[in-house]
Image 1 (cartoon, rainbow, N blue to C red):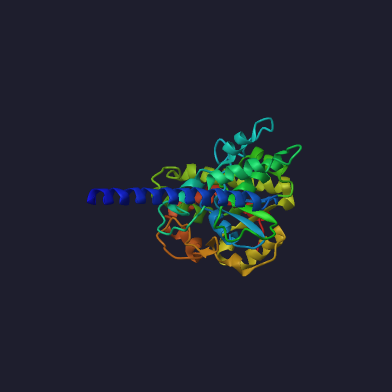
Image 2: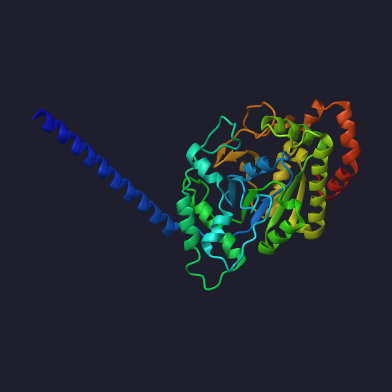
Length: 350
């Protein structure tokens, strides 16, 4: 009799688990159904932030994060294919499932499972409730009522699906003018920028130029932290800086008022003036939230190569040159001064 009672308890326990599983499945199905019914179409253009790494792209994307007129992509915008530095080549004869596979950003899975981090080594994590399966459903669903599909429709559907599947996005249901997103070096290749503006003729490109004497120490330090040798040779590193800076000048000459170049040092030291200018550039209302780097409205620590563990903007990033030797400063001046003067001539001055 005692054994039978224990057996009954086990049966009851398993039945409870079954009911819980059934309830969970029902809740997930109801959630998905509600999201598919109420998602917000995202059809505004992209304001792309792009230049070489360690130049303030992450910072600017975090400053844009919680502006009520912006859909701010929270991480690097990695829709590039086959690499993130390549604007994706979407072929309209393909099926929507193929388009989604090309554009899908794997980072959302890691951030959903482990929490959002700007850097993998960061101690700060934030909840990022994102359902990749729901994103795919929203993406496919977006084309159901379309008689004909254009390239812009594919990218609109992707952005609609991304922000629709990010369930704890605190800045979702408002009228937006732009999507902001940072992809390092995407603007370096002429063909990438041409494809971007072909799809987004109403889009904008923002590039940040950092004084190479401040850029090189940051790039080198970051190199050491991630255990790579990308910038170990100062001449090779400066060649990369020069290639990217030359691309900024080219992009500004080709696309004129659609491109804005700002100095990193101005962004750090004159943040309010710069963000007011960028508000005008994007035709959005200036808001003091633009002065605080955040993730989903929560203040976030700086993405720095140096050992500093503080929220907000680090003003001393404009003094990284002090870590250089006189020989290194001489090399940088010799190799970059002419090009730096040229790009400053194209940049906004404050």
